[in-house]
Image 1 (cartoon, helix red, strand yellow):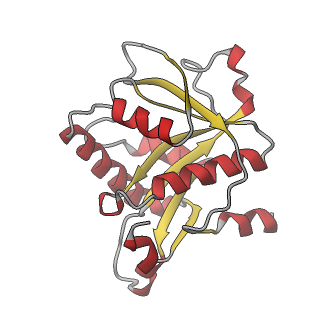
Image 2 (cartoon, rainbow, N blue to C red):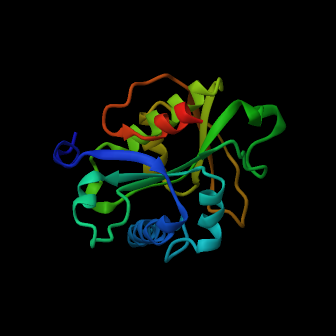
Length: 200
């Protein structure tokens, strides 16, 4: 595990409307990095607020925070990472025969560049898989760029199986992956959404 996670306590929470600028910054930075690698899976400059605000309103966008940033209330730091997790199976990708309702779906997974290589993406995927398991669903699914073999291999190393690639000319994504949901303990960050579920 990268020393960042040892020196900086992290917590996962649901995004709120006030988090929108920080989320847009993180996604724009990630998108620019991808473009510099020659990868066009996200729009250059990131996503517009019209793509992210609905995720916040639906309460399906989650942020990983560096808890030390709260020691300086004047500092406006973007989140360390973000992930959306919902039941929305993209109908252009997932067929009725896939039993779309049998899974949770990962979207907008991004880790801030200074935290790259710290294992946070792995931990968030484990958390997402545990969330699917807790919901009684057998699968965790995602789609990713058709022309990014490095990312596809990353998901394979994380236990995902390639289902198929859907090649639509108007979509850069289309490589579909899934893995079995599992109840995995998460130790890399504090999951503040657990208290939210208990109090609901």
